[in-house]
Image (cartoon, rainbow, N blue to C red; front, side, top):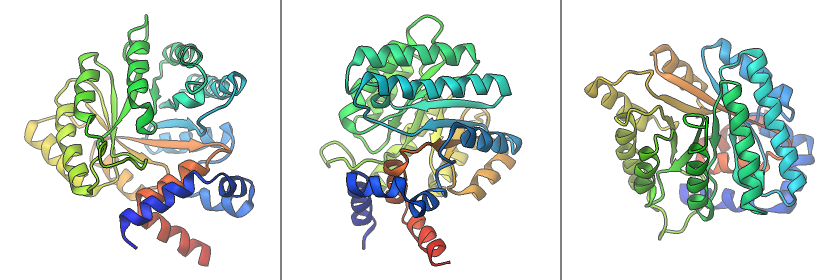
Length: 309
């Protein structure tokens, strides 16, 4: 089975409601997800954050969930983030938070999502932290960028809110320049959703080439960005560029997912690079988990070996 076929299959499974309901409520499903999910509760995420901080690795905490159906659900989701921000400040953690706009009610009402997310950015600023607006599928790209720019322009929000761009989208370079003009911090990733060839590069080599091109723009922008990748070829290309251009290793950070390439995370820290680990948690883990399997076939092999044990 080719990588593209495998990717498409897992992305399709990520949208299967029946399988999701079974997986999220079964002990086997929860055991399998433990590779990539810190746990089900806020306390689990904080425990993992403290452990990684002791290893010199900051984190971004993500309470999993998306596409809420009522304003009350959006408020409940936001309350978890307020808990996290209080704990970050109280415990002196090197941590920030990542939120999805559809989890904050964007699919119900943009005004609800704007108010809820603005309150969270206020809290992040008060906690001397930062809020990352996660990117979702391409239907939400423009909305997410506009919301982030609006939030960033509000009093006391400058430098406290950023977003994510996906290098597989053709529009990504234009979006980079738009956000840089406002001084907004960007997390650059490849992209984890299935997008049509009229919107996204269908071939990995083109996606990777675009990532490297955009990485060079970001690292010479004077703004602190995150390069979210586990791809060793891209990491090597970044290291070469940093050395050639005399760029400070701490003027940006690599970002990786909890449970993926821990060896690489540790080696980058030892080499003096900034390194942040994205730590997801919560009961609504299934779509995230399936997208992680879609991204790297090696993750599927890892899980299969462990299940056989």
